[in-house]
Image (cartoon, rainbow, N blue to C red):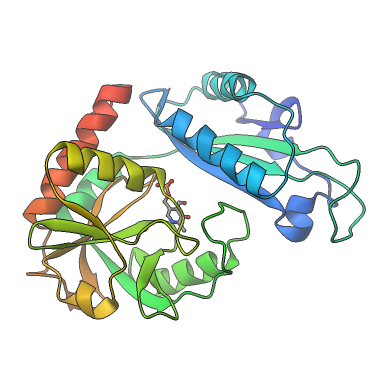
Length: 288
Ligand SMILES: Cc1ncc(COP(=O)(O)O)c(C=O)c1O
C-alpha cells in the first residue's frame, strides 16, 4: 500500500504529492510547521501543537480557513491509511501559491501539507542509557526563532556539523555567549539538583517537550530555573540534557569532546526521563 500524504484538500500517494513551484513555502520559506509524535497510534500533546501552530500563523498573518477539528480529522485519516503506530506527523502551512513577489499576495489561499513517517522511539531508550554527545556552533539564525518556520537552513548546517563530528546535536551559542538551544532540541543543564534552561524569548523555540518537562519536574518538586547559561557553565554542570518531540529526553554526556560530570548519564536525567516516559504512557499507552 503506498504511503499517503495530504496536500491542499487531497489525499495522494506520497510519491505523487507535491506543491506548485510558485508555492511561497518553496520560494521564501514563507511557511510554518509542526512535528508531532504518534505513539501507539495516538498523537502526543496534540492540543499544544495546534495551539503553537495558531500562534505562529497569527504572528505571520497567514490565514488558515481550517478548524483544529478538521486538521485533527485529516491527521487521523492519514494515520489510519498509513497504518502507523509509532510515527512522526508533519504539518506545514504555507502562505499559498502566487506569482513570485515578496509582499503578501492579495488572493492566495494557504497550502496545507500533512505527511506521516514511521519513527522508532525505541532507539531513544537505548540512547538514554548511553547518553549522547553535542558540539557547539555559533547561532547564525535570524532573530525570531521563537516562530516555528520552515526557514531552517542555519539549523540544517549546524546539524550537519554535528553529524560530521560524530555528535547527536549541535548547541547554538548566541552572540551573548549563552547556549540558546540545539539545532532541533531544547538544551538543559543540572546544577546542585536544579534544572536550568533558557527562558522563553525570541532566541529559542518554545518546545512542547520543554514545556512538558517543566510541568513534570515541578510536579515532582524538582526545582526548574528558566535562565540563560553559558558554555563554561554547561561544561562545569553536574549533568546536561536535551528535549524535543523526536527525542523526549536524552542525557548529554559530552560537549565538544569534554565530559559532562563523570561522562555518563546522571541520576537527575534518569529521574526526569522516568517522568517523561510515564507521561507518554498516560497519554498513549506507549512504554519504553
Ligand atoms: C530549534 C528547535 N528547538 C527546539 C525544538 C524542540 O521543540 P519540540 O519539543 O516542540 O519538538 C525544535 C523541534 O523541532 C527545534 O527545531
